Image (cartoon, rainbow, N blue to C red; front, side, top):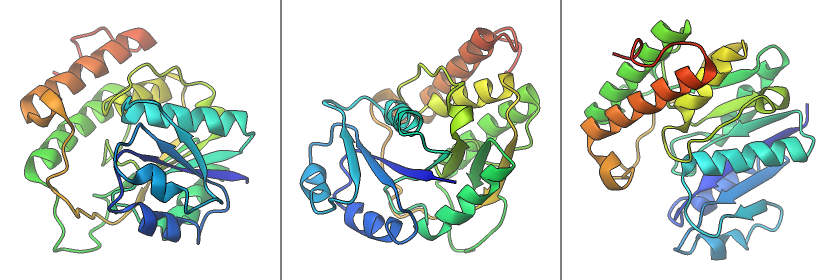
Length: 239
């Protein structure tokens, strides 16, 4: 399969070079979606001419960056897409392992909770609590058997991307994606990936930094996506 590996970035000068150097060892086709970085990220990207870059003129959000990666996969005629974050939480050496199940599955999702790789690593408590709650929604409302709702290390068949109609530009976009994946009957599997937190101070931005607000926002996005997909009446799930 011809695979595109895409990395959404926003002000990632601290990690960018190391992540790209490692990624290029395991991926032939690498795309960086620069979501309007204002630090040295654009300058550093020029040191990697073998990496394709799409730059947003302004910061539009994590979901918007992934949508650009999806579009580049489709327009480039790739068979599949692997996405990973640029904050050092994902191991590029696992890119081939992440892509391999695309021969049988439409979406391959990394899970930080399927297996303990390093007992000394633990997520920030409020993030783990929200992830657990949202994962419960996905399983109870959509019939999934997931263990990690928000891992950004994923792989997709191009044919699955062609069916998505995603409208959420921010961090809640995966909820809309999961709903549409269920509506389309996509085959999904999880792969255990290491839990790595290098910087617990990284923020979502604005009101989303408040855990209660963030969970309520996720609930609203999820219920709207359910209604839009015709899977469930709003309010009857994710209570």
